[in-house]
Image 1: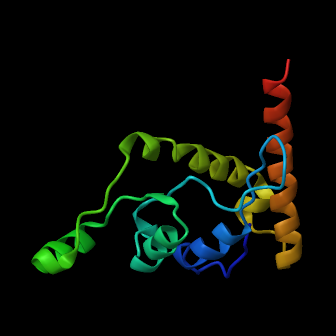
Image 2: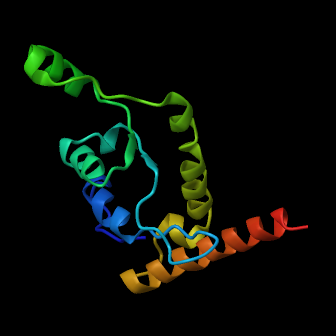
Length: 140
């Protein structure tokens, strides 16, 4: 999790968040490169897509209408259309549901905590509570 000012957009934090990702496997150290990243149209910038291409990560991000129109306007110099895996994109709702569960906690939804450190601690606490609840639900 990365905290920003309340009015800051999410898209500029796309790359810093990806740099913090660690994916555990059964053995060895965690991977830092996911197979794919799903996001909504807000993350469809040229810089985000270039970063994903450079790291060989599949982008599951739909193209904005204005970006598609600009690409088509350029003709053959505009490049090829963005590929989009609709089935994989449907799984993005898992993240959206988690964010809604985080916001369901009153302290996070209302921003009562005055300092960034205490707000971030609340986010970690709530995420841990969700993780433990889901973990106990799935283990026999």
